[in-house]
Image (cartoon, rainbow, N blue to C red; front, side, top):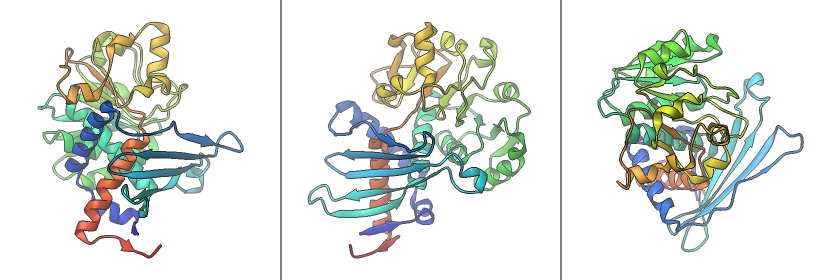
Length: 322
């Protein structure tokens, strides 16, 4: 069995390859040839959680286990820990064990990158990022991989004290791109053409101002619960039929869709899977677009399988008897 730790996963990944793998997986998901129950979430105290996310495809069998501990960051520990287990699809034998935080970060980054790749103009030169956590760090990198003409990345976070260190960290991995700190979410909108968000906010990050929102390609990663929301109602007056999701069950999971659907700011018929755009079944109608991701186990298993196969070809990781 192959074991891949965080360092090896980072060494293994190619951003363009993983974005393409996620695009292929989105098209595959629309065909429905996989088995995936809704993720199980158990908790003893209502906050600390253990999540179980299995998925089976003709190519790969696997399961991701995650622990979510909201109190960890205050102790200097990760909010998310976990592992991904892969099995041989033909025999059921254990195939690989991958560090779960990094699989999640890379998979989520690639999903956000796919959103930018397929909704933002090909010639954009500026990208905005709201959220300076681990997800934001990878979202910015995959966003720049998806649009290689980007020369400026503007960053903002409500916890402004985090911005200088995060800017330095991001600048180190984005050569040829200037990382700049925005004084506010308004300035970030004014300076950018596409925007990625990765926060747990329960209220919109941006003013409900159509002039500020217009013309942007938005990719929302952060709000994954019904009471979370990163975007205002005014956005949906601009997008028309250009609202996209990574998976249809996003409509039941995120407040960024649930709330505007309930109050009439968004119509169900204006929401489509990104696969429709990738596969050419739809064409963009508006200069303002919104892509919303909540993720699913199928993406995790597809990303893990790609990382496992590539690492094995390159002789990376540790093989152990099981």
